[in-house]
Length: 391
Ligand code: FAD
Image 1 (cartoon, rainbow, N blue to C red):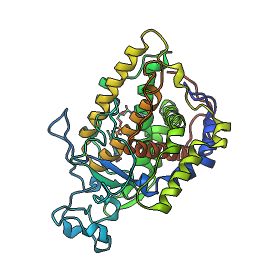
Image 2: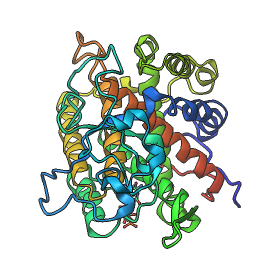
Image 3: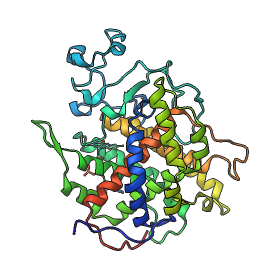
Image 4: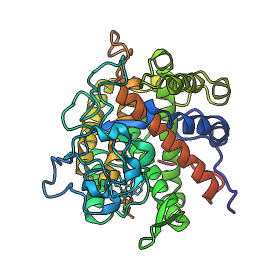
């Protein structure tokens, strides 16, 4: 039962489940796993402070395991006080729960990452240009996993997203534009749930973690549409990465660590110019099919506004570590939307692709999260053999 796999075409995409699984397992997943450990891709600039525009009473994390930053200096282990961290002012705490899992490094700002532009993204709420109050987070030390964030605070965010900003499309809906946002969010939601289940806090007292297969089945695997949407989101982001391939290939990955930066550039090249990927799934998603009808531009504007609201909602996630990954992944989707729908098309013929460093970091880390989720689905999945494509 456990080896059972999805088969058939992924709805609204151009590839089938098996090809995606094969290329992900053999090529993309190992490559991405290495890429996200390079210094350029592991430091994400983010405003962790929550100023929720919707519910002023929420947004502060009360649970220790949610914390990414802000804790008293005495908790910070001696072994982490590297010379670079020592230069921080004494009243600027860098310790997180006394554990390495949550280290924020605020020392990297101007010295590193040369050659990137500051340019607004019309799809997202906050970006790198928003310099004040932003810190660098080492993503490798802050994994996305089960934090215990649950209850009304978490639920109302998903409820707001699905009920107000991207309602599930009507049964029988054929227009792909009307489905795209829901599918992207649902796919991301599946991926978040899979990461929660894959690294679950099984024993809170002893801080013991491990997989929670029941949770993975209940929340994702037994819902074929949620699995399907996960694959859709993966292919959508993959298409954005390959569409921006020329730009990403020429970009400068400069974090101040020459060897590691050369490696990051090479891995990016192998990702965007991969003959095996070309052979397996040359066009993961066909954005040229969208916005063709008369109502196209209006529909795009409407979806852009909906996505902006979802992006703003991330400031209401009441758990810091979840907020970090929520913001990163929503910025990753926003970057993909910008690449696929706002540049060099009929509506914007004169716009050329310009990306912020943070957008590229979010895009690549999101692709890695989704790629990991596909691996988990394959390992643990017990879905029906044939997916029936239904809306
Ligand atoms: P939820 O996951 O809260 O789902 C709510 C409802 O949405 C479900 O009842 C179902 O009707 C619907 N639904 C569920 N999955 C899908 C899907 N894939 N597609 C469509 N509809 C769906 N918790 C952590 O422990 N770690 C994290 O890193 C983390 N990150 C989060 C990031 C964000 C942005 C948010 C909003 C929450 C995050 N959470 C995280 C909380 C987590 O997502 C759940 O909300 C929490 O575990 C409670 O789960 P639940 O069973 O109530 O269902």
